[in-house]
Length: 268
Image 1 (cartoon, rainbow, N blue to C red):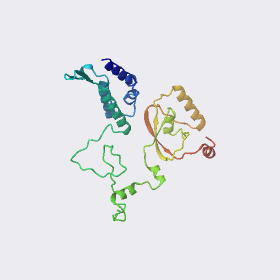
Image 2: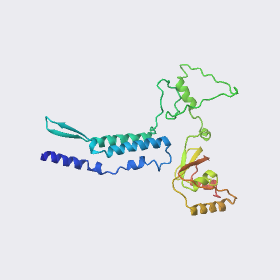
Image 3: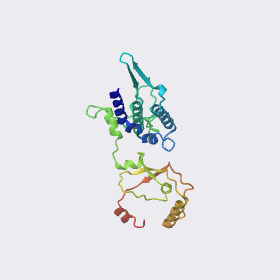
Image 4: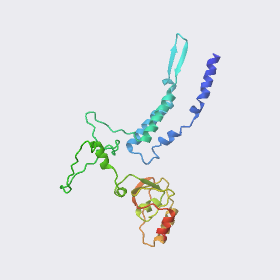
């Protein structure tokens, strides 16, 4: 009896850190109200998953399983709720990181289509199809032979970016987050330069998102007055400065070092 009591105390001490550990992942991954970038379906899935994990973690003693061994005169309690809890929590965190919370409903009778190597499999719609309007462009026939490679290789070569300038006419989904009111002024075209300590090779469309920090009326009035003095123009400022949302996009023309910027734009 004393040995069993000793083992129980050792097990209690071993699992003390896990039982008293504050689960920060719960308050982070399942904070659906404060996350502005979740869709309605993702919010519902996360709320349902959070409810299931809460029931596992705070399960009633009435739902616990106890095994009574009459031959060996032992009573064994199956206490694997925490193991199942941590397993489901890890699965949820991994699904959030990989964007696989919502899986496309696949029709088993429908054959899989070859959509190319650059198509995201999680997109719930068909890929765009090229339509030749009025036959203005001559059709190019591609002869597939042993030397030219397989059709899959030809498709990959066709989709490959051959020139850096193609970035300027494509949308790679690049986004930059700024505090207000600078974010709205950048989208409006009033603010034309943004400083960073790192270099980027991206050129072309760049999406601008406003952070969750709300600007004060004093910050807005002071910044608007500064740009009126700098540009010496009759500027039309935005009527409001929303926070925690996607505002629009700009064209990233170039990324210069501090020395290059001072040489090319001494007036700024």
